[in-house]
Every structure is written in C-alpha cells, then in structure tokens.
Length: 336
Image (cartoon, rainbow, N blue to C red):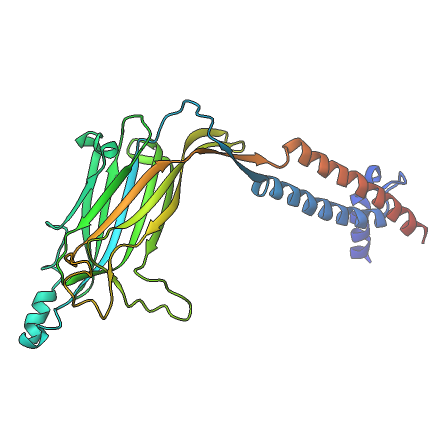
C-alpha cells in the first residue's frame, strides 16, 4: 500500500551508511539508526547530567598549625533562646484565688527583657566599639505562664588578636518562681559581609536540656535554675576553603562545639526549695559561651572529578564502540 511504501521510504532515508556501514541505504539501517540516535542521546545526556550536577568531591584534611601569620576572627553573632515558665510557691497556692493566680502568672508581668536580662563579656569582646555591638531581647508567649526569650548579640570589628579566655555571659536575673525548660543556642563566626549581610561564615546551633532524654523516656522533669552557670565551649579552627567549580577561595574559622556543662537544675522534689544544698540562693539562670582558637588548620577543597574534555572523550569513545556494533548488526540483519 501507499502508506507502507512511504514508511519504508522514510526508514530507508534515515539510514546513514557512514555509521551503519555497507555503503547503501536500507530499511533495516534506518531502523537501527533510529535506535542508535535514541541510545546515544540517553547516554550523552547521562554523561552531561553527571558532569554538571554530580561532578565534584570535597577533600578535607587537618594539619598542625604552623603558626603562619593570619587574621584572627573579628565578627561574631550569638543567639540564645530560653523557654521560661512561672509557677507559684506550692506553700502559697492555698492562700490565693484563681484570678490572683492568673494575674501573678501572666506573661506580661514576667517580661524579663525589660530589666532582668543582661549580658557581660570578657576583655576580648569588650574592646569592640559601642557602635559595633548590637543587642536585642524579644519575648514570645508560648502559653499563659510560659515565655520564650530570644536574645541576640552581634559584635563586629574586634581588634586582630587571638581570643584567649574569651567569653560572653547572658544572665536571666529571674525570681525563684521562674524556671527554664531548655536552652537553644546559635554561634556564628562571620568572615565577610556584603554591606550588613553575612556572605561567608561558619555557624553552629543546638539546644541543651536539663536532663538526659532517651527514646523510652523523653519526658523532662527537671529545669534550669540556680547560681551555677550553663557553659558551652567553642573552638574556632583556621580553615582554608577553595572551590574549583565556583572559582572561590577564602580563609576563615570553622566553629565547633568542644564541650558543655549544665548549670544548676531543680526537679519536682527541689523546685520549692529556695536555697541550694551549699546554701546559695536558688534563682536565676546564667549561660556562658567560651571561645578559643584551635591549634590545627583545616584545608577544604571542592574539586571536579572530571573535566569537560574527559566527559567528551567518554562520549566519543562510547559512540565509536557502538558504531562497530551497529555495523555488525546491519550486516547480519541484511543477510537474512
């Protein structure tokens, strides 16, 4: 029929003897050529997807600090979030009405940001100019008697020296009737800014609970309160970073949480006790962030696994091998 002849003509014209062999165009060659183009397109696409999306590896190694001259860290950002609840002294609950309880526990009455949250710092951080220190304290109500206090502190342009015995202390000078359930923290060492926006930095974040939790027991029955501070110790490791793909290369400090110690806590049995076993007043929450520079250097390199020329070589090599298979396939099918 006319349709069949047109179909056979199309397949015959699709044959490329240079690839399929035998010098003359044949219908079977056109069919083989169709599959050849499909398979080569899929394989080539796979090679180039791999080249553009999965063609990198990160190489990291650590070396002892050779005490080369370098710029010390100078820009920091700290964020502390503390969840605090108010409660009534169990000995007094029978002497007040329900409305008086709600008035006492009202979150506005217990806004610690107004006067009772403060910070202090060691000489290393305190040498920054006042205009380079930004402090904010915000409150978010979680329930009628529970608030989250979000404390942020940014320090810029500290003098170029190593941070020795450097610390920031956040103090919540709360009353006996206020306890902290958990503490979240963020620590940023900022390498470079674009205007006021950090573009190169290392950061770490996490949270601390007053007691260890497990899968079988995730219920927290203790809380932070008392004179002993919760301490987090951070190590800044000099880091050389180079990215062959993005053509970037810079130096900075990687932040690591090296150690932490939980401060004073209370539980259901001791929450109504106004003094610690050592006789100190059981009130308030202190959080201390310590900083020091490590004695090693990290080298991080992001490299290409293959160059564009290597990828093209693989594609051409596969195509050449497949052409040989196509030649043989057309030869044997044409004999039948």
